[in-house]
Image 1 (cartoon, rainbow, N blue to C red):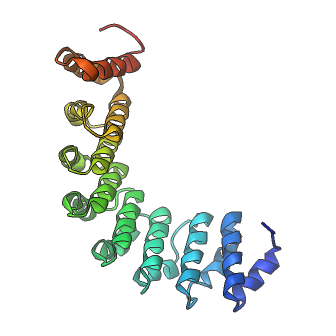
Image 2 (image 1 turned 180 degrees about the vertical axis):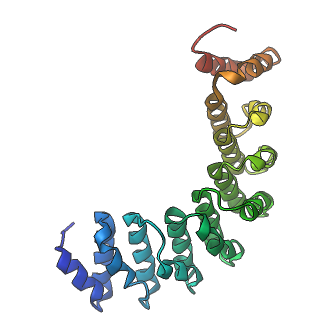
Image 3 (image 1 turned 180 degrees about the horizontal axis):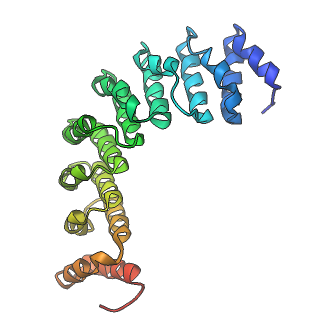
Length: 255
């Protein structure tokens, strides 16, 4: 791809030719140079939703220290494409104080926007008790994609109160939800989930079994007694998998 000088890129940003402007925005995003941030922010009011979307993508690549008010304003943009990208950027660059700005998007009419809002809250450390409780409620949403994002976000937030609810999600009818619930339980590190994760090793979904195995492995030696008990009660493939997990954690020591 042809590279352009800084001045060429700035001229393209200020110009009226949409294709040239979009090319410049993409190139700036690839450079990951924070010095371009003020210039990109000036283009956030562009009438083209595609340009606004591209600008938000580039801003996310620049890793700004906090979301600018102009980025926050785009959480209310008429375009679902722009709203969803604005949520992503705020999640990546914002703190707990910005979580309430994302909250209304949990009720957005557009599914992708709702998913991105959940994903954004998962990126914010401790988004707040009320929002965490809303994420827990979304584990029972009719749409499996919402449940998937909620399960993942709760694991990233390390919300201890979510443990019992994520254990319930190991019985979700969708294997992707079950798998992400297993991953999140491993990330939480709450030993109350160990028995349910051992049961998940026999799940019909291969990805669920993999995530459950990885989650249990992350607990380390403290779960060896529980694994030994589970091994004694099983035969066949389940016993073989438990044997391997026990060996991985114990370093090959015999129980």
